[in-house]
Length: 168
Image (cartoon, rainbow, N blue to C red; front, side):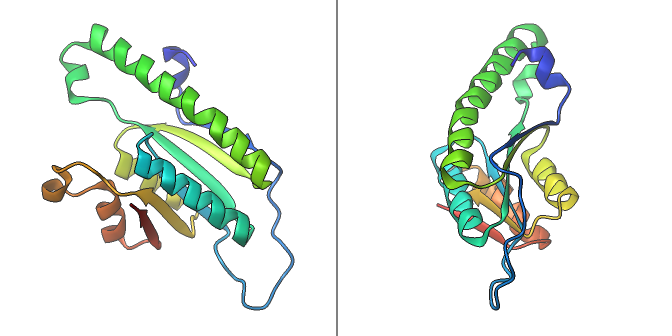
């Protein structure tokens, strides 16, 4: 994906079989759509794997969202830093694509990979609302600064719009 491709976000890719609700079973009225936010960190990848397992067991659709969050420093030196950051984002997207594709094939679940640009909390919230997510799964933050400001996971929990699972 080139830098020109990421400017026309959101980018949405579908993997795996088309989703169809399973047969009705008494006592299994679980989530129809599970949203997982990933950023390439170990806890986010565990969150994606956890969400995939839930989606497989519950016969749910899985939407995996990666948010391109521009750095504060990019605005100060737009040419050099922006190009480097776009390249890093492209590499991360490429790294995430193959495991998502494999996951959809191996688990026989419908997976949508959506790439957004902006603030992670705002974009995850927007996708969850737009797609009417029944559950949001994210990884726990390792950043010490988030104890003061609040992590994406903390902000999603405080929004109180859906159940949120935070995976360590």
